[in-house]
Length: 221
Image (tube, rainbow, N blue to C red):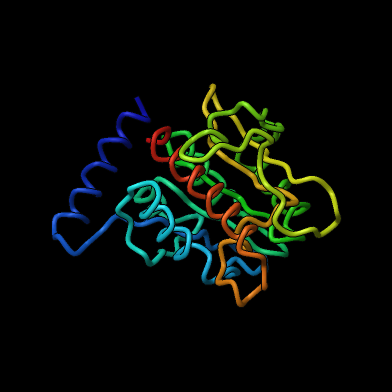
């Protein structure tokens, strides 16, 4: 019943925002407290959106929004992107709001930009104390949307030299949080001049990102 109610609210909001031909649906970056650089990867989402519009046929605004964890505006977005290198703190009210959003059909993509892991795991326990991150199998649909990743999430940046992992929180059979760990997808989405990544790596990152969006749009709300 809760999910149906929020679906109705979201539908009304989307129609309200897209009633004018020049207003396109958006995705958002999550702003959180604690001092971590939630604002990292400034060119990442605009580049991913352009790629997804071209390859997936989506019609997203090329500018991302910023939304706070505790804001009711979370419910405007089917996809929320979270990144950074440092500390993350959710208040109890923020954790409850994020849980409500995810249970109602929302989708959170956490992208470890190196150093986020030990903080975000603790805070996500406030959101879903009953859940543990699981390693998604290579046959999970998120790896087989517009692009095929038979070996799972690609490795974009080395960091600790560990293999990249696609982790997830699954609530009542639905993937509500996708966590790209030891991977750095967002850096791969950024302008090439920023990290000087080979174009082949950037394409891998963008294709995986497009898969995440495609999965989100067909499995959220």
